[in-house]
Length: 216
Image 1 (cartoon, helix red, strand yellow):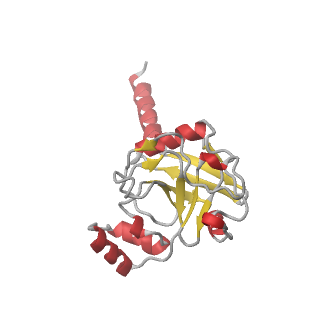
Image 2 (image 1 turned 90 degrees about the horizontal axis):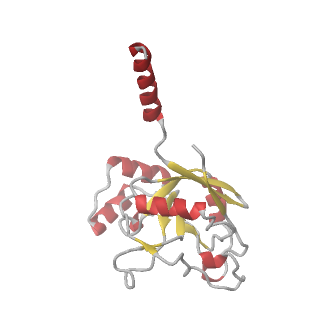
Image 3 (image 1 turned 45 degrees about the horizontal axis):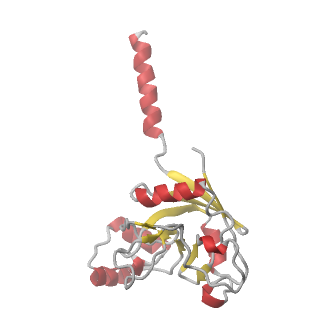
């Protein structure tokens, strides 16, 4: 092969490789619209588990079973697929827990892994399937200063900027694994966050989901 042609082929392949998006994306479809999320490569255990469950259609027809206004929207309990309206939900899982990968912050639109409280789960392992979408409220420097002091952490300038622009739940930082974020459809979460709820923060109407991976 001509050396010049070989050189250009190598350059082309290198350019394609460099420009390839390294992230995995998924779409959560609800009766209110679609939510597109990006999974973090910094949390490979949670990322790969989520991909596995989506491929198995594990999440399809499960409910967003918990909504707390100005806090979170939560789903992924397998027991919710056939749940009666009066059933209490939130204890279901796929039969295993995930090792924590704590580090990313809880800005609005973050996707976090639900878990049991510290008193029965001191190692902070994540539920194998349940996740929550952060809503939260406005955040300013005084709030971040407070949680830095209480938790012994330090926010970067970029993290402070994100919190002040988006809002969120900094008091959950360093306690739960955040493994992704919404890149489109935050308005859908806003609509869901405002819905009326009944017992145990379960929405008065069923909100089912279907999840699929996006092809690159």
